[in-house]
Length: 80
Image (tube, rainbow, N blue to C red; front, side):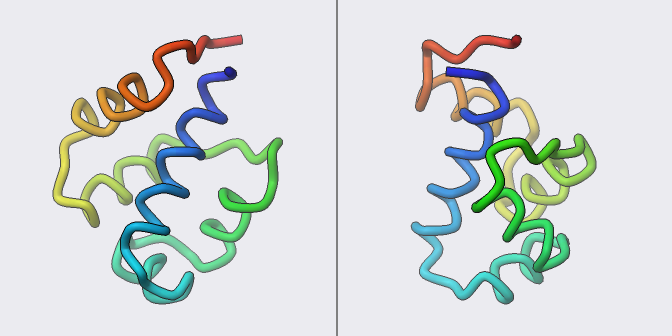
C-alpha cells in the first residue's frame, strides 16, 4: 500500500470512530470541510503536513503517535 493511502485510511478511521458529521469533524480538527471531503473521496489528493498536524492537534496526539498508528494499521505501507 502507498504510504499516503495509509495516511488517508487512518484519517477515515478516525472520522468514522468519531461519529461526527464531516463538518463537525473538520471544525474540531482545524481543517476545511473541503479538505476532509478530498481526503475521504480523492485517491490522488496530496495532504499537507500542516493538515496532518492540525488533525493531530484535534485528536490530542503527537505527529509521532499519528505516524505510529499509520504503521500499526498498515505495516506494509511504503513510500513511492
